Amino acid sequence: MPEPRDDETTTADEAAVDAPDAMPDDATTDDTVTGDVATEAEAPREPAVPDAELLAAVDLARAALLEITPAVTVGSPAGSIVEGDRVLSLLFANTMPGYPGWFWTVTLARVDDAAPTVLEAELMPGEGALLSPEWLPWSDRLAGIEADQEAERLAAESDEDDDDEDDDSTEDAEDADDVLDGVDFEATASDDDDDDDDDDDTSFDGADR
Image (cartoon, rainbow, N blue to C red):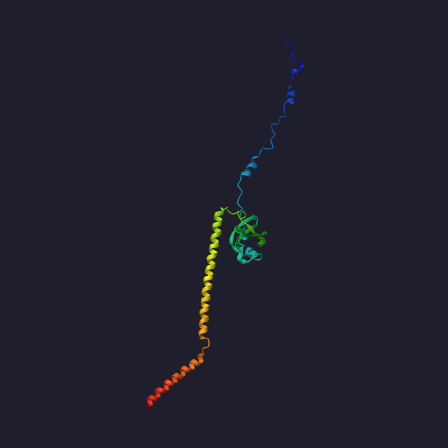
């Protein structure tokens, strides 16, 4: 039987050296997520609770808006946004044309038991306010333009008819003034009195006879 060659014999230590790097039994990979972290990630976030005193400071917020915009541009309260602990934004409807979906926004805050204070007041876009309007075919847009033009034409004709009626009334009044112009009402009244006196004299003369 042939004897084993020296280069064919290996020991356990040599096998361990030649084997790929092995990880210790207690080693963990970077991708391993502990149970606590997973539980924390899955836990639903509790909704923020608005500060009651800030929520009631509507008059303060409106007064702040009136310092930067006319009262006619500020509508009714339109909600609130919790910005943080004891920080709240009150929203008001915007009545200015050209800003659909925008809101007057006043951010309030308070510290401990202190009264609410105004942090900032501004006009902010609401959800979808910055999106382009729905696309309409040119035929639909043209129909709307023509309808507006027709309405303007009818309104102009109505105004012209009213002006003509006013002119007719003015001319009638001027004609009446022309008829009465030059008439001496005092002389006419005096002549009527003289005629009455003559009638009275005639009556007395007949009675004497």
